[in-house]
Length: 276
Ligand code: GLN
Image (cartoon, rainbow, N blue to C red; front, side, top):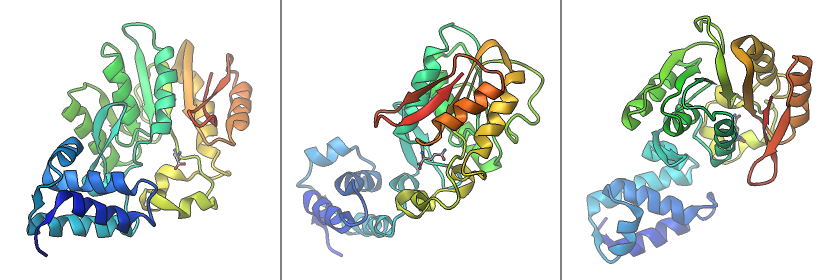
């Protein structure tokens, strides 16, 4: 493999990825920026520079893996969420822009300088860290069932210098007796037979973070039923869910005795977050 110009290397990779990715050119850019340890802007500024043969070999190995479907966030080991760079790993879901809707809604219910926030099923720590970055005076607890996720959330907190408490646990189990002003979660909510699971990046993500029993509703229902005893009077529960699940979640919240129940749509105008 001999050296080649940046612009030519990118054009070829984008073509190679065109069949599998809706964002082929962006993927090509992000992977080359990663190999060269430069920004995407740098690539555009210096697009007539040569990529040497060893960098080219490393790049082509990544492009081939992407062509097999592996998500860019796993290949480069990070993804931005709420403007924060977060380490990613195949042990957790990749943070998605859809989930920024949950962060926005939670922030509206965190008006004070201090308070107690709980994030259940934190994964990379994305939601907990985004909220801590906006409300530094709040006490933030982030829980995940899997040790790898807890370790990753801790690494992300350290990287961002945000002081949150990361704990291993099964939802509320094992939390010290206390109350929260706001509880948030983006739990698994996809039904195990959903064809969405056979397409694109989700194929490489952990099923444990995506799939729930009961047509995807069982974990959401569990959170609704447990949350009230953990909330201060007047506290808020906010849950992300699939676009067909708003009514079921509202109904569960109503039965559990919640009030002020509302469903909010994401930028694609689909039901995404229900709060109470
Ligand atoms: N919204 C994600 C997807 O459709 C799933 C997130 C989740 O299950 N919590 O891929």
